[in-house]
Length: 170
Image (cartoon, rainbow, N blue to C red):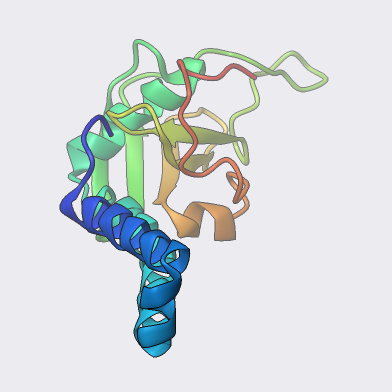
């Protein structure tokens, strides 16, 4: 985000005003309930606004999900995914045009894709979810956006929403 949203601007203004009121002893003496109410609202907004902003970023098309795969993991670079919606803005089934790059092999030297998890990254370079390999040939992936990716143990709660500089490896 390069510009502040109107909600964040209002939050900043409310926090600034609450701080000014605290510093002004006369204002605090005349309006203690109003100052406390303003401070409580500012704290509530600080919690609610970022959650709403992250949720708003999750309004995705199937193309957004397909593009988030190579942005999140190098194994998908140069591959094209076709994704279909399972649950809007939450779960997608994606099929690659060819097998992903090989990052790991089994004891026989065969690539491992089934059960492998990889993060996905949105257009603003933030981790927005992740995908799990469904087949041994690496062509089918189930992708989850937001908290569902955490619930599915694809990405950790501290990693979701983090800004990354490029696709991950391994």
